[in-house]
Length: 124
Image (cartoon, rainbow, N blue to C red; front, top):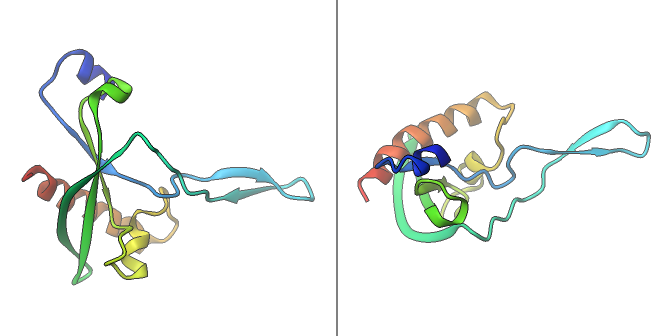
């Protein structure tokens, strides 16, 4: 994304805003490792008014969009999709919670979101 910006390519990026991202590793009291999912807060992302609906597993899921302006990290414009919205039920909200979720259904839902969501986001 930075190279595309540097080369002045006429393109945008579309990705998923992972609320908890990957995981942080911590030491437990017995000195073994454990994983900890912490909410990631990126204040440099801008909320947008873009909203649309995708169908995942025969259910409507509302999608919101966050924006990363090019000047922030010297990248092309990037839009991040999120389903962590109050109008979605808990299961739909969790689609964009964890990168590398071990649940196969969650992985499939995230892939559907990125594919269908990317097409819908492009319309705006």
